[in-house]
Length: 180
Image (cartoon, rainbow, N blue to C red; front, side, top):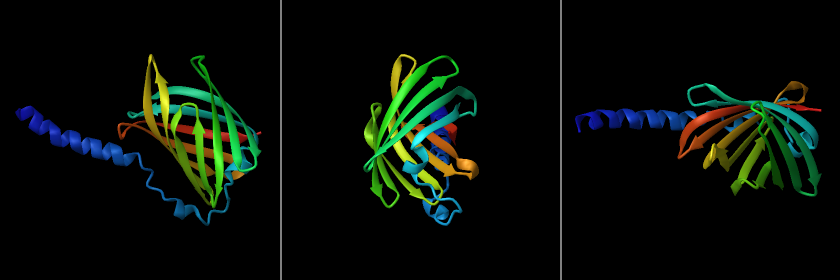
């Protein structure tokens, strides 16, 4: 009993720190006047290649991957076909259907995204939030993603995603996109 009384406050404090640390601290409004303006459908139209890593909550790199992305715009819909190649040999494909809602707002679905994703662009930044049914070993985990993408010089797009499960950060994904 004494041990649990001592452990509970420390556990609650650690959980609060972890849960709040997954927020980037950025707001979209701070990027409104950026020198580059990101238009998602323009950036992803055609062929794009991306390279990324997944780090667990302790900073250990757990996976590395390459993604070949084909983007197609028809009317107010952006379709992204993402073909993942992981360093361990695994291959996977995700197809996003993203509705262009106007005013920098987007909503998207994919086969492993059970609830529509929502996103907003401001200046050179894009914040995209969604849940994914992620295969982990023989299990499937429903995890949250809070993606922050930033358009840099030379058409490079940097993505930092904070990954959570049950509201607690379990890792981060860093991806660099390069237009072909």
